Image (cartoon, rainbow, N blue to C red; front, side):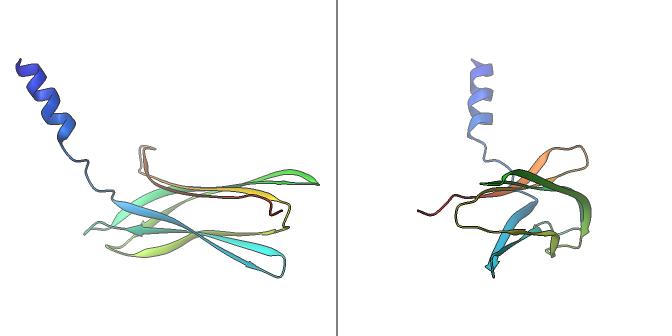
Length: 120
């Protein structure tokens, strides 16, 4: 019975708030798509994170992939641009963009993603 009580107590405990926030920003202009990955440290102390931003593009001309990785140190409550890439942006192209932020052990702390499909 005690085990069941502890299990229920653990199950109902709210998850700890995320230490950071990942955000993708997209700007389309003159047939080009600019993708910028951002990270905001939500902690009251400085923090060090690793990140990965991946882009998969499918067009009539084929498939392409672009992955950018790095590390960043942020002051408390600071937001920074992590990475930026530009690609041709046709109306018939499909884009899948993923941004992940990790701790030093490789655990995912925050994510954002965007999928853009062809217009008809």
